[in-house]
Amino acid sequence: MSYAFNIPFKDNVKLKSIIEQVVKDEKLNTYWKCSNVTAIERLGYTDHGPAHVKIVANLALKLLRVLVESGISPSVVKNYGMKNEDAEVVVVLGAIFHDLGMVVGRANHEVFGVLLAKDFLERYLQTIYTEEERAVVCSEVLHAVVSHEEPNRPLTVEAGIVRIADALDMEKGRARIPFDTGNIDIHSVSALSIEKVGIEKGDKKPVTVRITMSNSAGIFQIDELLKPRIENSGLKGYFHVVAEITGKTERKIIGKFEI
Image 1: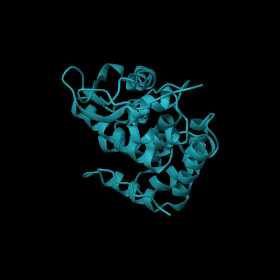
Image 2: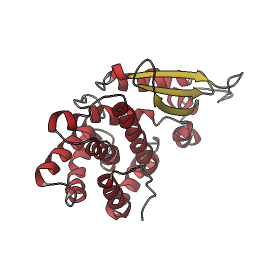
Image 3: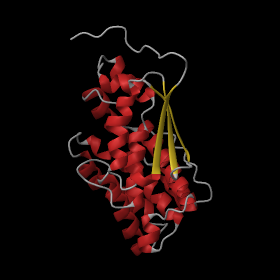
Image 4: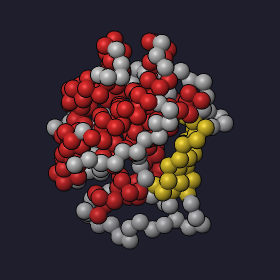
């Protein structure tokens, strides 16, 4: 069993090698399946498996590239003298493993994710980096995993990116499962209002996140979930979020709600 995992690695041969290993890794792919059993079938949550992981990885990579293009130095470059391509490895791996702990349970899943990710990291990085470089990359990835959730705070650019990218996976398809199973609340309704999330190089700040909504209920998703992630990411000064309602009239999501 394996899942398609398309990442625009461009000329980053290190990232290409890692993605090739990820796609073929039956154990990791099975863990992703188990994460979704826990999240969707047992808890009634949104997707926490391969689809979510792939989206977050692509968002994180795009955010990093926009920030680098704007002159922001990744932490592995600033602190360890490594390259931007190594920072790309860190954010993608951080995204790949950030929800792995869901195979254990929701509570403290970021901590369990760190414990589970270590063996995978050692194996993936073995032929790419020296022992010293492996230790650095591994520590940076594990920090990104553990700090994507409160109360832990990101201390690196890469970890902050993973934290924000996780919250940016908010388009309406992600909310369809809990909504269809009857979990109708402000979380599911607001998530179904988010039509599109786009990332582009900004004018006022390095990154502009452009969100289109079909209904103003989507403001809850942005103000209550995305905003705190950005504010606590260590990267607040680099982001400008613009949210707009598409169309002349708002789309009705539910016709009636009773308790």
